Image 1 (spheres, each protein chain N blue to C red):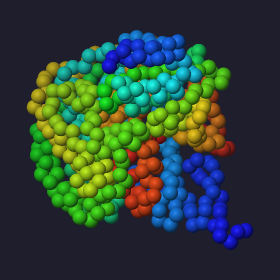
Image 2 (image 1 turned 135 degrees about the horizontal axis):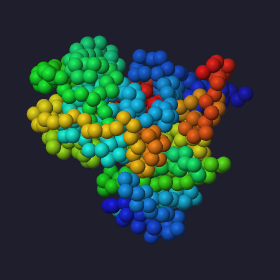
Image 3 (image 1 turned 120 degrees about the vertical axis):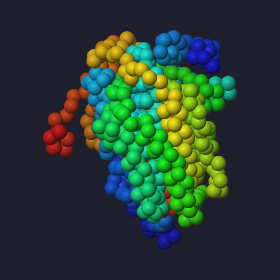
Length: 154
Length: 390
């Protein structure tokens, strides 16, 4: 199935909650933050869509907001779709998709660790790469490199 | 205190930072960060009851170098040497994936000869890393000989790489738009000779290790990974194929010149009793060596003449846009998500690695297994830590 057809199916089911952007290199579907869990569930459980695999999940620190990007793939049908969810910078929080794809568990922990974006409903949202007492989130564009860590100069 | 109630202890879990309530004989054991079976710096906190594991908490991040942040500070060419350090056992494959991602982003056409050279290098590197895997898998079961055999043949591949680009581990050979230099004189003959030798040795490895009854006894029916669980956790590469899923990006989402080459995709068959066990994952890699030899031979035969590098400016600015490009690495899918904002540096670069997801599937399949079997389970996933921590 082409990205356009998948987007049409989503549009028919979720209406205003989704919006298709026919970007030439990577077409994607922009999903409203409160709809992502249902959209994900729908994509996985609808037989003709059958998105059984979350290839990659990450975030981008855009000037206006944080964007979570989901790369979904269907092993059964060999088609893919990219989803984007935007969340404000002052209180970034998105619903988790951990229950839908187990792969999201570690992906979301990584995004939380490096961007400071919270995932509501995640069962174990703790840092994964950096030590528990690390301050700040390095992949944010405004990240200040610390001068010391536990009293040691860096 | 009630006489029947078992005593409880509260211990801090180093992996989660949480306090763990242990009942009776339960213990928390730190396996790592320095342990012979870790393949790098990885700490596994095991919750055990005697010899039985009830839970595994992997603690990663010891080798986190912030590659994704570094990428934002460098231009596209400058990041190439860093990709060598994603998976140091398969640097060529990492170079390859990164180059493909940027080429797609900036619409750069790669000369045909360069594509063939890339495929030869990628497949030779795949063989090299699978030979290391065979050796370390032997070590994990207590066999010391295979690693000597594996390293002997790997040495030949490293010699081939050294004569091509001067490096033996971090090659930095591929460039955006092609490869750094053409093949040196004598490379093709030497590579052909190596393929002939390796084909004979391959039989030897199987007699020595793969079909050794002691080895099978340790590997069969251990660490069984069901296909649905593997897909759910995003497991890719030989670990996924070991569970019987015929899925290989070189065939299913062909890139470079792979469509012009003939090869098969080995999958797990459950011939030692259980589909998706450690032996299946091991054997998939062994059979891949054979297929890689086939690919290298064909690529050497079909290699056209001509340029090896397209003209790409030292500093170039891809148009605004983004791509996600993935390739089949020896340890699974290596994906690069590159976002360009129209400047000379990537705005965002995300590296999705096979080992990261593969390791995340280890805890669920290790529940209720023996500690000594856990070493086989983890070893058969062949994770490489710099790839996980990035």
